[in-house]
Amino acid sequence: MAKKWKNIKPHTLKSRQKMRKNYGLTCFLEPKTLKYPVCNKYNGKKECMGHYAAQYYLNINIGKLKKKKKKQYLKKSKKYIKLLKKSKQYTKKKCV
Image (cartoon, rainbow, N blue to C red; front, side):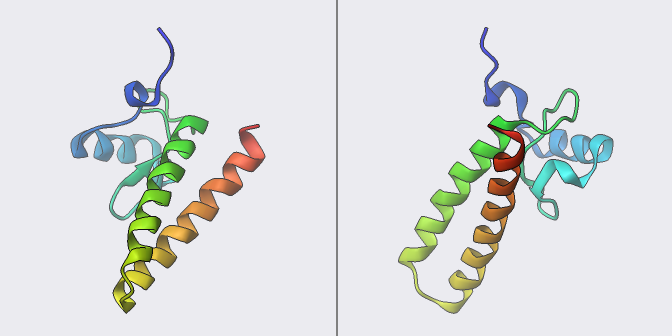
């Protein structure tokens, strides 16, 4: 069976909290809300697939927010762009 991100990532809030407890906050791009997990839930190693998945969903969110033009949405989109840059830097260094 091929290794797929959907089989490796933590799905529920409880599994994400357990992952945070075991492996720390570096496993999430947005650690306050436990969003965008990038680590394997079994061993805590950062996965390139996790970063690619996070980039995909961040791009979707940025695109949705660009359609709306209010200050609160601009603030959110800046946060998402910052997270996207962080993820792209990792993939540039480690995932070639």
